[in-house]
Image (cartoon, rainbow, N blue to C red; front, side, top):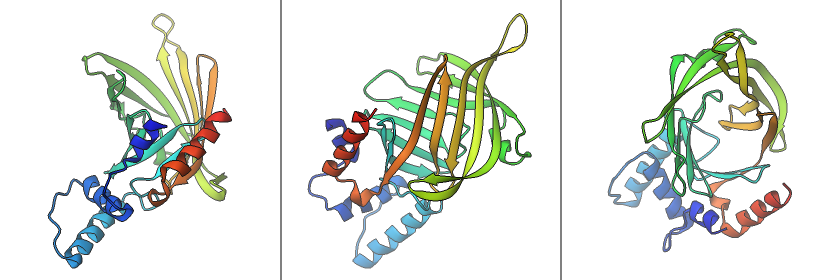
Length: 247
């Protein structure tokens, strides 16, 4: 659980409120010297308004807990992108379009690092075409060594569906995706990966996902969101241990 404590980012000598204020300023990259209480309050309101225009329901510092025992902390939100970090110091930059693969992964304790960008097609068209219409796009993955690989995707938006999310009924967006390659000789598709997911626009999170690779299927569901002010180490570690013990 030491990794979990590091992820929480406890800073000696700072009160909980002070840590929250510092986070808000760091998120937007603002470096200012705050003077009076009035100017300090005005600045924090300004920064907070910028953050909440992107994601009103999930403040920076929120912790997401999943059914597979994974735990992630929201580090920043900017321009429709959310940066998350898990308890193994792996960071994931994700788009607010759930069918777009992870934009960037940084692993500070390992060697798995890469960036991904769409090189062909437009995955944002998926919400503009009629429901059930496939949208194809190509993603190029590049590693620090310069090695590049290409991945082809076809995704479908199936409309909204009522689903229980964190104990409440909510309309979530339903998607399915296939990652495939084209056979060099016979020119037919070979499916390498299949994903079915439910996305909460309110939270900006995938709340349920089933992924199949090499005939192995894994499922992950969002089970809890812990707000920053309640992300105490003891409370959180107990929840995480319980989740991982039930796997």
